[in-house]
Amino acid sequence: TNNSTSTVAAGARPVAVEVNPATNKIYVTNFDSANVTVIDGTNNSTATVAAGTAPGAVAVNPVTKKIYVTNQNSDNVTVITPAPASSIPLNTAITPLAGNTTTTNVTTFTLTATSSYSPTAPAPRNIYFQIDTTNGTWTRATNTGSTATTLTATATTPPLQPGLHIIYFYATDGSDATSINQARASEEPESSPVIGGINAYLFLVNAPPFSTGSEGDLSPRPNGDGALLSNDIVQQRRFVSGLDTPSSDPNEFQRSDTSPRSTLGDGLLTSTDVVQSRRYVSGLDPQTDAGGPTVPAARPSLAAEIGGSLFGSKIGKPSMLRLVSGKGGAVVVELESGREVAAVSFRLRYDAAKLGKPLVSLGELPDGAVLTVNDTVEGELTILIDSSGPLGEVGQALRLVEISFANGSADGSVDFYGAPSLSDVFGDEVIANVLFGDRIRSVFRGDK
Figure 1: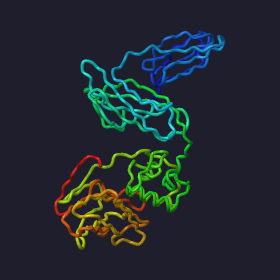
Figure 2 (figure 1 turned 120 degrees about the horizontal axis):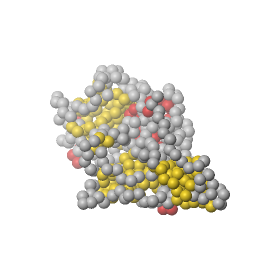
Figure 3 (figure 1 turned 180 degrees about the horizontal axis):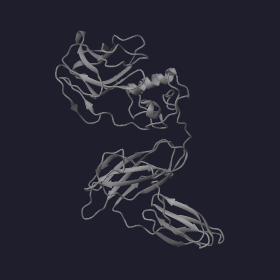
Figure 4 (figure 1 turned 120 degrees about the vertical axis):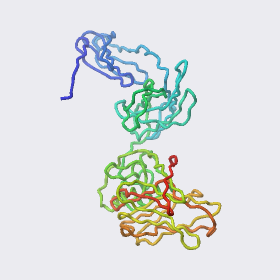
């Protein structure tokens, strides 16, 4: 087998063991030798610390790093304060909560990393954190500001039940290296940075217990009601179109991100989530406990401009979205479907100064198709069309929507931006491209 074992010597009659994951130190109480064996988890080296008579139970405070040992026959407690480790000139501090207590299940912390290397201090690069363990996957905090020697970032917890919790965190700097750090499988490989010390912060969640609920159970906000009904579909449409923004407290986003069903979501709210929610409500798929991502992922960064462009995956036979001219200066969005499509969502930009306010109407689609429009931001439209069945036949050119403008046929631009989303009747994504005119050009921009 691949298992291996090793033995570490302790004192006489060891009876209890405790681990401090923040320092990677293990503490063993030795009942008959009246001492504590301290094991360094990095190399299994040991040190011995005197205790009282018949030491038994041991507890570690990972925040203060102090160790508490009960001595049964001397009726006292030995408090061990570890010798300070050599200072690491890359340290991360946390802005404490008032009274070290939060009243919400989801909390956002502010973390600040400071580099004091000398004579040259590489700028802190990223901050990573975990909740209640150091053995899982480290999550990168969201960078919010920096100087030459400091970095500020925010760390948002997943929904936490009431009680005591610990956030562990550390920073990395921008030092160049010749090796590759693959410790975080979800990240791109990077030059191995210098890693600062792991710090810990203990806090209390003083909030009501929450149930994770069911996938697609969204109404009434924010907790749902345990039943999957048509009002959940309406709320899902509002989330996907951007009319409402789901919260991560308690786990509204997690319940809204329903597709792909195999992974209980992908961190994006698209037309596929609407179709999957419809399948839950109709009973085509059984009610499922909420799971999957708890916070949104970055949106695809593809954009397309008028003048001719095509973007999207090149795998399989794609469906095609395009803009065509309608009557009286109207713009029509057409779909030529490579597969049966039950829902479509996309975003458009238009020249509001020249074209004026838009009016969006449903195109030539089967009865039962539902249109949701978000026009709350001037110059932008988010449009969602969904149905209980296919919107049309494969290969057929479908007129999804017609958009007319207050200024009629004024000379103004309209273009897609971001990546469109198409879903089949099973809630699975359909490959989507966008086409204008005769020429093809891909345009890449930053995340939207």
